[in-house]
Image (tube, rainbow over all chains, first blue to last red):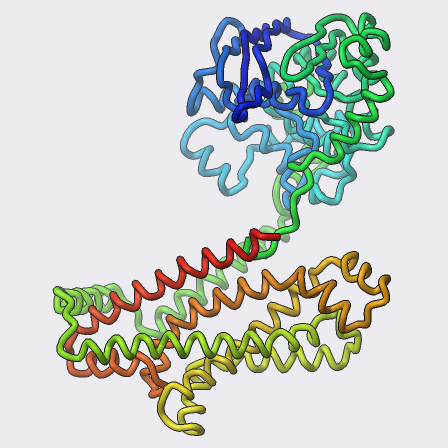
Amino acid sequence: MLEIEGLTRRFGSVKAVDGVSLSVPAGQMVGVIGRSGAGKSTLLRLINRLTEPTEGRILFEGRDVTKLRGKDLRDWRTGCAMIFQQFNLVQRLDVLTNVLIGRLNHRHGVLAKLGSLLCQFSPEERAMALSTLERFDLLSTALQRSDTLSGGQQQRVAICRALMQQPRIILADEPIASLDPRNARTVMDALAQVNKRDGITVLVNLHHLDTAREYCTRVVAMQQGRVVFDGAPSELNAARITQIYGISEAEFQAEAAAAVKAAPDFDLPRQSALA
Amino acid sequence: MSTHHMGPAEIDSWRARMPRAFGPTPRGRVLRVLAGVAFLTWLIGTLWMFDVTLTRLLNGFSGLMVIIRLMVPPSPGEMWVEILQGIAESLAMAFLGTFISALIAVPLGFLGARNVMTNTLFRFSLRRIFDGFRGVDQLIWALAYVRAVGLGPLAGVLAIATADIAVLAKIYAEAIENAERKQAEGIAAAGGSPTLVMRFGILPQVAPIMLGHALYFFESNTRSATILGVVGAGGIGLQIAERIRVRYWDEVAFIIILMVLTVAAIDWLSGKVRRRLIGAR
């Protein structure tokens, strides 16, 4: 059970997330929707603690994770794996190593940590990584550099990395926004499979309402940092969307898709060697 | 669940299916060991060749400590006006040398860039000439110019300029090759001549990079201008060399401190200039 209580994050005078309270029982697949700037990404980043909350608490199974530091914080992050829009794989490392990165925080003792620096993983870890890759039809790519893969493949590698963390929760921030429809489907199928078969709670930010309706058991809609809808996907019909956002569903989708493409932090500026 | 812990049998079956995922092949392993042995042999061989031993290193270290003790407290001596003049001269040499080389390197950079100079033979020869010039160190140029134009800062300026033209031209050429074609295409589509395409399509993209590199070279040349003085090419180096000869280590220390301060000041200043120019896109 993940409980969020009055979670707020301010950036200057803007409240990106404004007093959000949610309670997510284990095993749910929750879709988070909203227009750009609604605070969806910030919400997920707050849960993983990549962004620090200004106010409020996050409780996981009764334990406050908002104040964790050092080793405890890293353990929490391992337990709530993050999937990013741009996959965030290490491009120059091979797929297998990228997946093995999910094990780094599971290695204990000085020797194992030194081994990690030298890229030494145990045969068991390697076998685990290979079987995870096979599960998502990626085994043949294991020894390729990850930048040789298509976007859909890379996102599934990122899911493999997340699974290697043996997380309780997966937080997916616009996982299919940079993918074509066919690849988007394989990635969403992978997330749904992880949710059903492994029983991992999935929180996924989506801008496509149809996707949310198809895959999620619960939809949370956000507007200006607040939760404005929380319920079954079937309740979130076109009329309700217009009521909440003041625009039609088609407009909502077009706007969200455009915003995702224009998101500045994903389009890294070309940098000179000096910058 | 796939991310369960595995028994040895399962691990072995994976190893059989995909041996490469578990490390290098036996052949690769042998090659790796061989390469390691070769590297170690080379390392130990060079240490042996130069007779690098722990006792020699320790002796050298204690000798160095003696020098450092002689340096305290640093003292300007009686010739501090000459010292300041020398530093100013070194600084001027570095500035002039870098300026000249940066200026000449711009057209050479364009001529050496694949996207500008389509004549492969010409470009290739030019690049090889750059490489050749880069192979000769500043100090050698300085020695040559001292014979050619006589003792003094002119030899130093020429040495700095000659040595840096080729390096800067190569860096500039690479920056130009990395420039975006779309912007240049926009100028061509508006009816611009090849020269104007370079001026308005490429130069604005690469100018901050060029300037940034020139500023870095200015910094590093301020340091190397010290050495040029030792061979008679002007600047503070001569004064350092003279004081070392007569073991006035306290005055050497004073000059070194001044040099460090000067370089730090330039570093700070050029950092500010660079941020200003590159930041204001």
